[in-house]
Length: 188
Image (cartoon, rainbow, N blue to C red; front, side, top):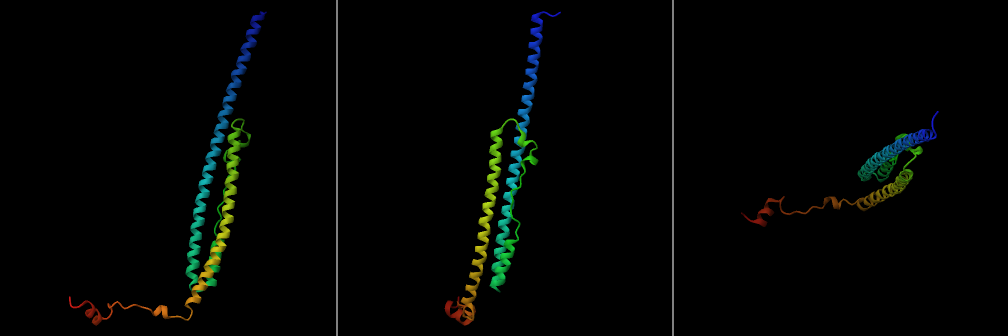
């Protein structure tokens, strides 16, 4: 039969063992939470970078649409406006695509780092709103650019309609007439 002190020592040993196990589980959970947050942050950066590249492509295609509209507008302003509007309207719209739970499984169930989790969720939502706002402004700018291109082309056509005098205007510097060239510069 065990003495009272032996029973206390056994209970204390079990308590310490349970405490050590809890500390080990706790440390594992902290590490898992940190890993999940790191994966989520990395996925957010990658999604942000991809969205930035999509915006660059979107802007480049918008400039190409403007150049095509300008070139076609010299021949026909209405056709130029239609082509410019179609090219601008059919560009692929940039999107911020990120599902945190897919990118970092267990993201919404982490035990530690709740403030960092909230901050990252807020950043994702803010980025989505910024992309949406930028596209709304871009659509308005596309419409204005198309309308301005049409207006400019019609004004240019009205300015030069029936007036070929600007096309025939040349200045003779004496280089085309050998006699005038010699009389101006003499016999060198």
